[in-house]
Image 1 (tube, helix red, strand yellow):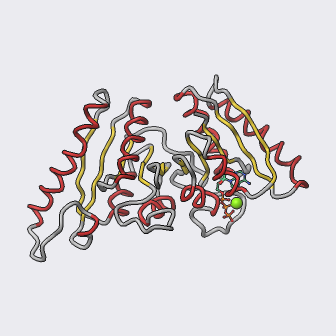
Image 2 (cartoon, protein in one colour):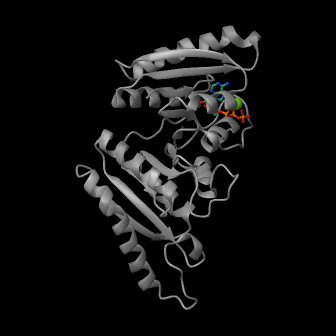
Image 3 (tube, protein in one colour):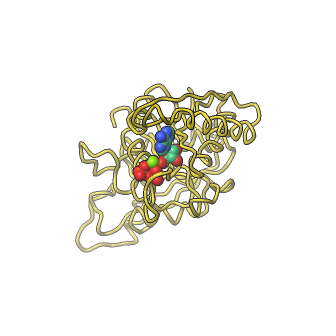
Length: 277
Ligand SMILES: Nc1ncnc2c1ncn2[C@@H]1O[C@H](COP(=O)(O)OP(=O)(O)OP(=O)(O)O)[C@@H](O)[C@H]1O
Ligand SMILES: [Mg+2]
């Protein structure tokens, strides 16, 4: 299925264009560059931005099948609508608007929260830096159905790229509801850690069988999810999380861990979703 990229001409969206074109060649699918203009008066400028983006895409990924499209309307709404027909949506972390202190733009966080397919927000160490090219794929595993969707996405990416996969599960004494086991008040940390390790290993067994060619390691980290995942992402080329976790509140698009990663990760963040999320 087509990879859809949101293009507003910002440096961050151009990183997204390159990342998406490379991914499209890997997946052998077309890449569709979509620029949304708020009004008819900006259409000519939009076409210019798209032409520049198309040549960047071809340069970054020779052989890519690149299409471009311009629409007039609201960017987040149109991208969410179009995501229903895409296999993946790719966006920059920031756009042309916003203010300096802002970490992720409203289009990116809106589409990541409400898109109908997996959404990748391309990030690097800084806004200007390209995303890291090397390193493993990291996936956050919390045992929820949505995190299973993340695990599947992560295995597919690791296999496509021929890189190792690191499955990370975090737990803390403060987050009994977020772990698989209910913790007693008097906590035997070592026993809990062993338990968590066993549960993560069990969870990964069927995936290892399905993807025998992917090198997998499992890490259980005693830390809060955001800190544990951010630390793991430091070395990674992509971190994959579910749109929501175990403490999913209905009506809220993105869980707090996924949201925090969109703001702070130093590598691209993929937000996967299960059909019902
Ligand atoms: N008009 C648009 N058309 C297509 N894609 C867009 C458009 N605006 C934003 N995007 C996509 O979303 C990414 C993030 O931009 P976003 O608009 O969310 O951030 P911002 O402009 O910094 O802040 P905000 O718009 O919330 O004030 C861009 O890199 C681009 O991929
Ligand atoms: Mg914007």
